[in-house]
Length: 151
View 1 (cartoon, rainbow, N blue to C red):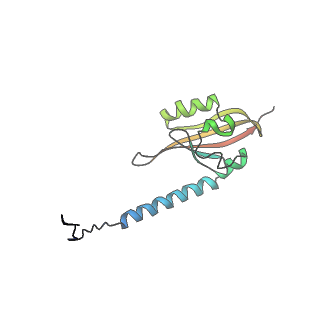
View 2: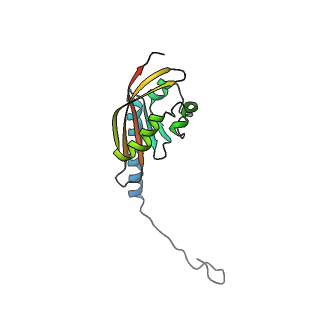
View 3: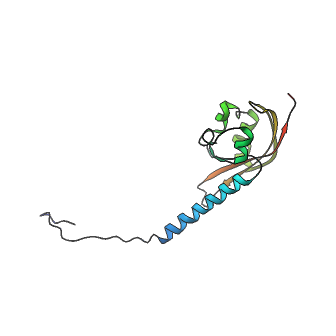
């Protein structure tokens, strides 16, 4: 610090222990890598959405089955994916009405004609994921059954 005469009169040091912060940060990174590894390993198409229904991530099976890229998927609302092909009224009701109240649904059937792959019946499971601190709210949407329907 300097005096009124602009002479250096001393130094103030602040020491902060960063070990705990660093360990917590490393643990969070490992948890994220584990979660991403699981999502990419599962054979069923999976999408992870945030509370605003924007895609946070999707599994490799989702990208492969629907023929989309990560760049065209992550960060977009689910209803905007594939030029609106996911803007399905029954899915919208499910995500906006049923899931926020019940936190879970299993075996919900949605039928839709998807451009490029045709008419399909999707059997969906979803779970709301809330961290212990209640800070991060995510939705894991799994397509556990996909049936081809006659045109």
